[in-house]
Length: 139
Image 1 (cartoon, one colour):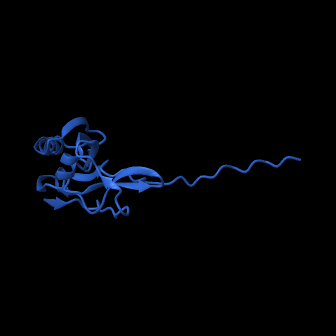
Image 2: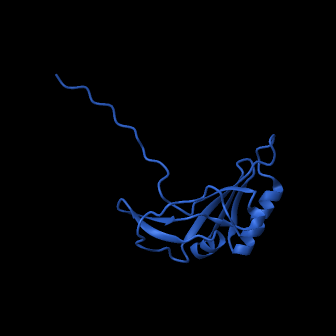
Image 3: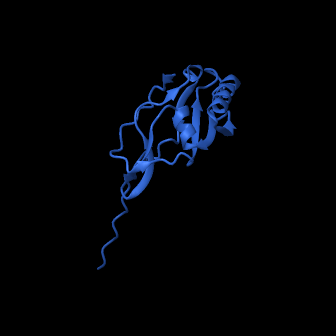
């Protein structure tokens, strides 16, 4: 099993508890473009993800070839094993979220096909930076 390039996540701190093994998780696997001129997912790449999901005990919930995504669904225990990553619950500003640390694992047959795996980690990806406009003063 290889490691997915660019998938490293630092620790969120001290876990507040384990992710229940039966907690359902939706994971989106993002695939490479089929060719330099065809940005859809290649049917062979989708078939490889389907085979991987079957071996891992995950269901294929949706395939979107134009978006190059395959959405997988299954219990946390199977997702943890499939992607060779620890999952834990963390406190994030008073909210409990699922997180992971380290790189994700992928079987060798998916190594060059998968660009990203999303959904195992619920940490916020961005923070809003807008500020409301100041109210005009009253005279």
